[in-house]
Length: 208
Image 1 (cartoon, rainbow, N blue to C red):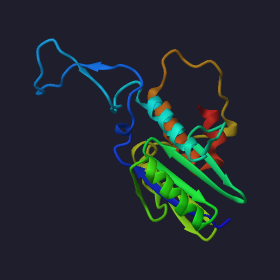
Image 2 (cartoon, rainbow, N blue to C red):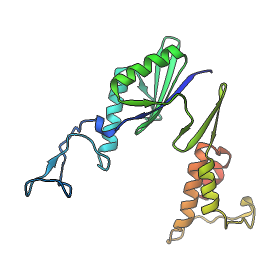
Image 3 (cartoon, rainbow, N blue to C red):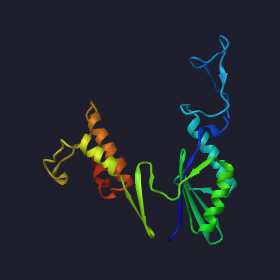
Image 4 (cartoon, one colour):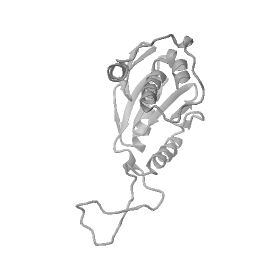
């Protein structure tokens, strides 16, 4: 499957969406305003509780206008079909990846997306969310060397297994005092595993 793949960033993502509800804020320090006055927000700003859902609804509406259908199992992924040609779109906040089954469809969808959003396009896809992507023909190789090195040097350098996992008896019923350091290590390893190291996912879920 030799698809065209390109990544993009949404410029000033949240500011491209008008708020659907009334929200007032206190004037920031240094802002000249009359006493006992508040400011009405017209645009979604980073830090608001409503901002993520507001932005997601905005994207869903825009994508539906150009016939992208949301994935039922993953609301950050959209699909597009035009006869025998297909496309997939993935987006998380302001980072996105677009894949199309041919160059003509890719150019067409890029132009239509550009009409709806202010986008900055990359020529291909080298990295996404800290995951390095290397393409060789129809194959993609994913790696996270920076995160792997950080986890090993900062959190796992003093760990040495005394027994194989299968020889260790784990008792159910966690202690009242949660070991936050242990959970932190497991959390980082789970994040690393779901992107690349699927072979250790079972063991990590077992330990979690």
